Image 1: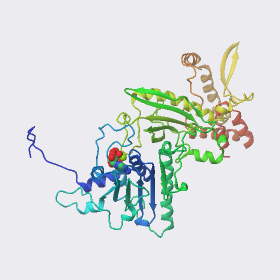
Image 2: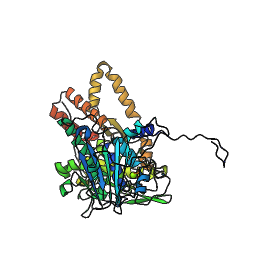
Image 3: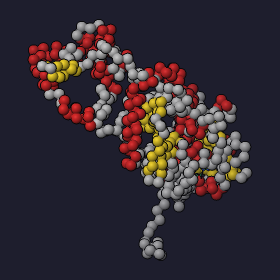
Length: 509
Ligand SMILES: Nc1ncnc2c1ncn2[C@@H]1O[C@H](COP(=O)(O)OP(=O)(O)O)[C@@H](O)[C@H]1O
Ligand SMILES: [Mg+2]
């Protein structure tokens, strides 16, 4: 063939349907993420309700996601079933949660081999089905086909019924090889595993759509296996905004080119202020430590639930125990998908260079506050000064002039000198060299030029590092002849560990 306008010879090479669809199954969706991607379509379609049906039947289990949105006409449904139904470059309505024209298909194929959609629009119903086994069976046919079937599979019609009174859409997933695999309908363990997955879906949807589900007149209601109040998914607010001890930074709006993003930092209350039940609920689906960091919303739908977004000083911050109370809300419009590198699964967001600096300094502030609350400060006010706090450095004078010395009775120093034995003089010499060369000028200059920027003890260390050090100090105390209680008292009096009382409580003898 030759293009008559540009005179370019060409071959037509459409993708092989079976190969293409099979590879599209590997996007890495989990079941909760896949279900959320379908609900992303129900919201812009104007749905007030979404009903999820999880039917256990071993290998014949099925899942239906149905809504009372505006539905699709037959031609709209056929277009919607097309892979890449709309280019990511097309501008979307401001409330649209889609982007690539792929979500419904990739999410479905990631979980099942057969997806059937029944949609009712203006009172008339249409059905279409992608069936991977059918497509595979046609793989050797001439013009390898993207054959979209026009009927539900035999026996599936009943499963396509919806609670929706009129217009709406049902997406039915059957042959759930990725969800139930080779489960046996008679195995209780398999059934329990299926129910655990339902639990995970419930927790995840309550989190990612919490803004839609909140309030006395929520914009959206999601039900699981029923239509009653008790079947409704409850919203989960990551920021405990109703709690009197939650602290927040003022909301800040940042202009990025023609767009605006907004950020607001939260420090959640210390666990003593929450009580056991609330403390557990507030932890979130992944637990306290994993749920720290930024919460990135796109059109109010949560994309990233706790991540430091690659920010950090020097190297990227990792999630640390003592920052677990820090959660920062970040709102994006759907017009910045490229800048933020939003992916098909909508699970990644990367801050563009222009805002990293501002986000970094806000995050530092929130982390600092979170650390203080974690260590029993913040709301509790500064700790009472403890007259008996002991420091590893002693501020002394020599001939009336200041001089800084290392406390030889520090448990680790004492143990080091003891272990040095015959080489004690060498160890002592090393300590003296350190004491004689304290970089006073340098410290003074840095502190004057950049006040309050010096790292606090162990601030850039991991919790594991600090734990190990506390444990070693404890062992040194014990080796020096202290009882377990004396050693713990000693640790609690040490200045270097004053922020880590919780870790001292975890010491093992
Ligand atoms: N539940 C639904 N109600 C109405 N329209 C839908 C529904 N699900 C999908 N669609 C239509 O199908 C299109 C394709 O959906 P999808 O593959 O998720 O890609 P995207 O959401 O990126 O456009 C949507 O843009 C929408 O027009
Ligand atoms: Mg979509």
